[in-house]
Length: 54
Image (cartoon, rainbow, N blue to C red; front, side):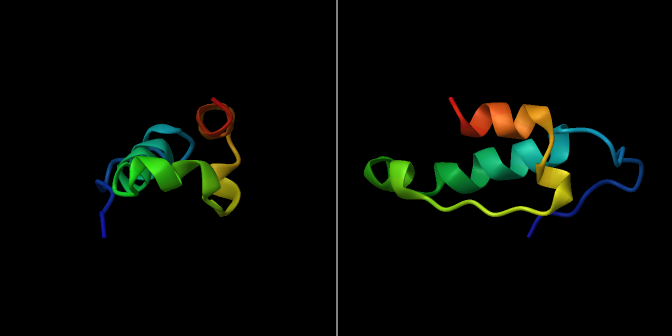
């Protein structure tokens, strides 16, 4: 679990993107292309979607 800082902005991609990068890094490389990643509306931002499609 990772807690956000109390002064973290609600409309930034830094939090969800950082968490996603750390989570995917824990999955063995050979399995990373077969992941189903779900998210709420906070994940539906351009920076996160762009990172997912690279």
